[in-house]
Length: 388
Ligand code: MCU
Image (cartoon, rainbow, N blue to C red; front, side, top):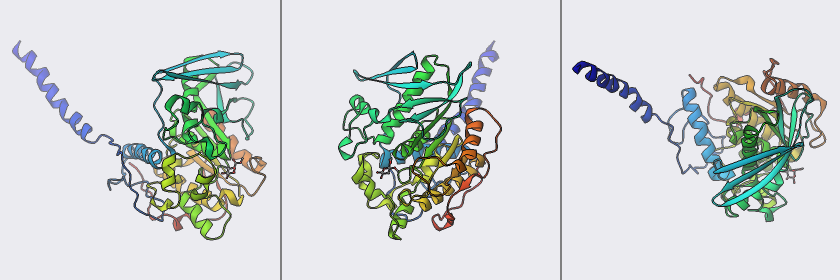
């Protein structure tokens, strides 16, 4: 009798040791972030504490840290799921209500579904898709501007997101829209629309392309990011856009963007004229999407910064490779063409990514890296490890 009581106690003690060790190793996210000037694209594989990223678990933790830094210095904070989210589906309209702290907002999206029996994958399209969505994939049209206005600088703190969280909230429009995407997914999980919430892409072009990249980065339930022609604020790196500007290019930069609109949060104003002091850059924003699918669709219009987007996304592809998923990210730059027109030479790349990440297909998404010739090593001073 005595032993039958003692033995379980011993077992408990023995098991306790690894639990304690695990707790010491827990992912602790800092609340303040470095502002030390660094002209190179920051090293994704060194924590702000100086510790190296060695394992895939370390990388998952580092992604949280990078996300927190990007939110603190640039994007503003993405709030967690509100206390109540409800949804109804009627005709092709999905209506969503989110409530928090005694306040409520409602918005709706329209769903265009393939014919036949679902559940179907779908692409959430900011303001409507400027990429061709194949007939076996649905489209969810999202009026992102109603959630976070983007008329000009006077749009700061305006839109339904700010009606709910207050006009002084730290979020820029990109973050407000990502929050909207997060709620659309809540709604798709709540009501049966015939759309599979586990097979969702997000797209948008130009200013909405900046938004689609931020949403893919911030919302882990997105399976595939398809940002199109976002340029600076999207697939471009702030540092490289500044160096291109200094070299005489007509390119959007951080200092210009804050004078034009409210895509970034107010905190970014502190960095706009000194982007080298940001703790992160957009190679790391894109890397938050890993291991999920990401096809960055760009153009070679000067204002978008083709050298900046190409080099920045080459750096992001190095990160995907280190994380063991080199084929899960592609970059299709494909020459200078009418803004947001989607040229046919990007079609095969888009088809492959949609096949693989939304349709459970086996298309190859390997080695998709098209753009002007740039040497990424000019912009980085780190090497990518192979994470264990
Ligand atoms: C590329 O997206 C923007 C760009 O950042 C702005 O400077 C310009 O005014 O508008 C572009 C856009 O959204 O075009 C539709």
